[in-house]
Image 1 (cartoon, rainbow, N blue to C red):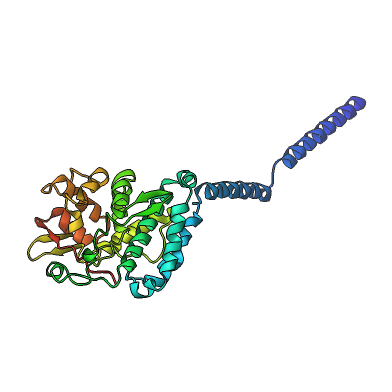
Image 2 (cartoon, rainbow, N blue to C red; image 1 turned 30 degrees about the vertical axis):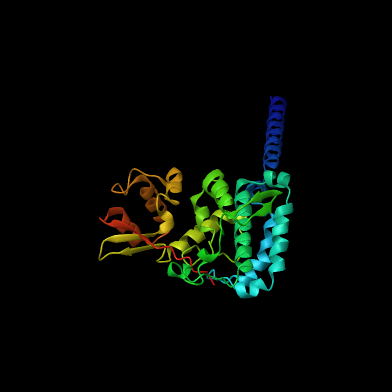
Length: 310
């Protein structure tokens, strides 16, 4: 009997020992809290890195060709020092030569945003070149009855007669605007990125446009432009909203319909004006937004001031 009891005790002890070892092995196979945290951090870092890599925009260096001259001769308010720029006209020519010689193949490989930036920079640099080629502006006495002496309207054919080469193709400013800004790109904010070298126009930017931050630049340009009373203002006493002449449906207003057209607000206005007001509401004060959305008012257009932006 005692022998049987001893064998039973030995068997129980062995079973307890084996069970304990298995539990220890199972426990040792599990990661510690520190190890778990490390794995989680590592995985998080990997995911974060992948997100940054896929979202990081690429800066196209070609646009840098315009940086030095814009920074040197255009101030923060968009005023251009044409007098000093004329003494450095060879710099403008060198920049335009780069546009002329640029590869169509490289251009076609770019994203849409950089293509838009390319044509904005080409337009603005060429416009500056036309101005200094005719600076100081000369005018006939009879023309001064219609425009001030320093109006760019005295420069004959400024938009459609002065030709230049881009990627081995002939262009005028009017053709660039018609073909790209009013056509291919379908982005009305581009109209606020060309200065038209005039007081009523959007301010000239003292940096090039870049694809990687283009929409931020365009929003900034729209906001600055609409802060000019010549572009937008409200006369609450007369219940009248004044818009820049460029917003007229037969000028640029019609190009806002595709992206900003609405049937929900501004119902008293025609479609092109509804679209313009809908666009403007993104860039003006809340009080002004409230006024144009719910008040009864008429629309008026300010006379476009073509005086040189110097």
